[in-house]
Length: 215
Image (cartoon, rainbow, N blue to C red):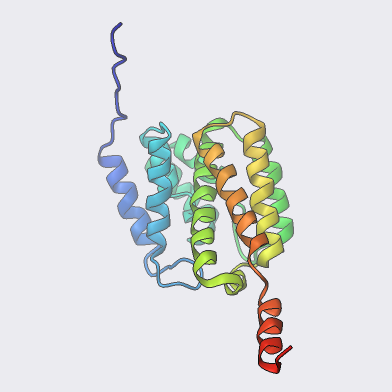
């Protein structure tokens, strides 16, 4: 029996140009209330997309998935379309939940995005799910290190953040599950389990107070 020939995607100057573009537009931006350059997230999402079988266009969309929301709105989307083509622009648009300022209220925005995801094509869902997978993995790592204080970083706080990623994970799994959506489901379950097992800050303070008083 002959072995299948594995052929990697062709990656060239367009991907390099997209990386420079992302680095320029997101220059100075960091992950929420940290010193971690935002570019690290974009690189991680692109890596996940390529590892899941994505081609150059999908990797470019992964690098640029936040450039419209965070760096200029609709004019930026038109620029992305002009520079990288309609396929990339469509995926970037499908990964964007806000196109201008002021942004809608957080819960409203997230509910709208969940409705959009239900009808998104497989390519958009792959990039979007890769974005969320890296987010959840980062949240889980930070939570294990810092505890409940991390929820102050997020507009949805603890309950809203957990609800949003659970809802997204369930939706991704509903239609066309793949390695990324399965890993996201695992990561979301691990985050939920970690939060459930960890005593709240109030309970820890109460226990410390009781210990000091000799109760």
